[in-house]
Image (cartoon, rainbow, N blue to C red; front, side, top):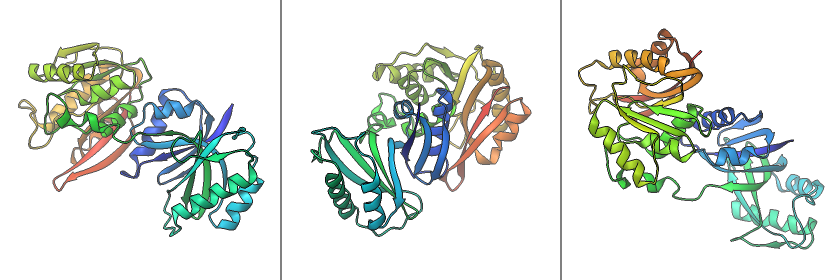
Length: 346
């Protein structure tokens, strides 16, 4: 049975948050249909179980739940919509609720969120008997979303806890490296590679283990390799610090991988002035790696990788047999814009 579900996604990047959510749904074989997509808000038709599927994996979904009603954002429309809605399926006798309001889309609404929260709460109490307001431990937290002149009211079923990724920041690990990716982006890249829980995922440039940590935490079996023995040891140290055990950590050149039939690859090869490519040019390293990775991934499997934009890694991937699926750009500094590229093996 499908329901209308809402997902509030972060606005820190114009394309990655929605792309990550779609990739998770695809990886976990969730049947869904996009109903509405605006900045910071995605509305889909899907089984309710998709809320847990996304919330347990996503780095860029901050809140989600089931859709109740939608109307214009003026008070008259909101009042009529709430009075016309059948809330009996949502509230039971003695339930407590709260109302929070957030903004999405391109709204520049000057509406006072606290005043609107109080207004909606008053209306709910008028149409539902024997319910009480509890702003701390509400049994039925309601979320109002203002976007593009509209108002959406939903039952909030997931809210990401503050500091979820902060404990795994690079400087909080036993082994630190300045080029290590932040955990939110690492988690996003793992998800873009589309592994299901239990799938085998590989990082052939494992460095100090950031991508492997995030892959393990969503339930993947992990392999890591690196050309440097110290990096292999550093990855193992960092993973064990978080109570994680990789399936294997291997000393290997990413241009000649000793693996076959892995389901997915998520990796960030070395590039830039601080990175060591062990004597190879960046283009040469990437081309040879893409050839080796194609042989390592099972047919139908995916790879998500970082690269400097100027390298045009999509064309390199296509030349080595990969099918490009999507690309995203992240500005790092004046001389580097990172491209996040996703490929599928045919």
